[in-house]
Image 1 (cartoon, rainbow, N blue to C red):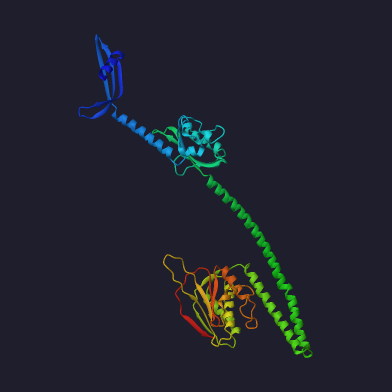
Image 2 (image 1 turned 90 degrees about the vertical axis):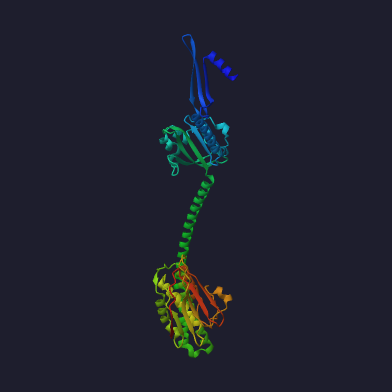
Length: 472
């Protein structure tokens, strides 16, 4: 019936066309053909001409293209990255859901129009994609200044970070990339832009920048305060060094004159009191010297260089000969590993530690002082271990519950009449060790001696040498 109808239509209109007509070939393949039939007269005879062309591949290509476009559309629309595409006529082809959420403009409102600019600006102006479609990339600096740059990830793409005051409640910072779309012959057929809301990142960077500026200002202020404090400390040191010594010299001098010139006329108790005044003045002088030495440590520059600690300790021990006079003290010392440090300050460290060891072992019949270091295990792939040096004695020791007082200025664990001293020596030692990037601590028991451990920066521990003994 359909064939009769089509034939009648052909007879009346003299033309019939099918764009896609199912057809079965002689080898039983099913294809689609384009069928065109014309009727024309040859003399008195009507002739029907039929043209048949296989359009199977073309139809499948068109179908594949349509499916590909649908997939692309679905991919773009469902992408979490805000993006839109315009064609050669500046009309929106794609406007995805993520961009809807960013701008508040719906897809159905935007697709097919050319007013995408209104989603970002109050007044009409070219967007980046417009400049690329029109081949006006040279005018990009006019609109975006120095904020744009070529993308390092996408060839021929342009990147811009800019602030859009009309987006959201208080504006948004957007990072967007625009690239021209071209056909197989290189002709521009549109452009695509992808956008990213970087407001949080920019706000954080601006906050960090502000904090850095505030920190720099605080550093400047603190430096100024420190310089002022140093000047005050220098003035104080000068006052202590000169102004306080004068009355001390007067006390000692006049007391000495009274004893030398009038001792015979004074009762014994008066002479005893005068001697106490002189001893007090001498002790005060030592306190002033130690206090000045302690205050200068923070300002004295470190002159670090390789130090042979074995030689340094031996020289320091020799310098303490007067402290050992009339005593038998056994010294046990191994070959100490060297370090990087200030020789003069490290000499002060071991002078104080060895001096304390001699002082607090004074009443020990068989006094013994040991100087060495603890070998550390160095594992493959780990940084060098830290040398731990120690000075150990078998003297009077101390109770560890008072160990926190050891390195405080003017703190003493024994009475002045038992062991002389100012209570500044160990504070000086700790200050020097701290400035060298190390630390110092002690272990002891009453009447069991004391051991002071210290580190001086990070240096590799060599092989443990044999110990040397000496009776001096």
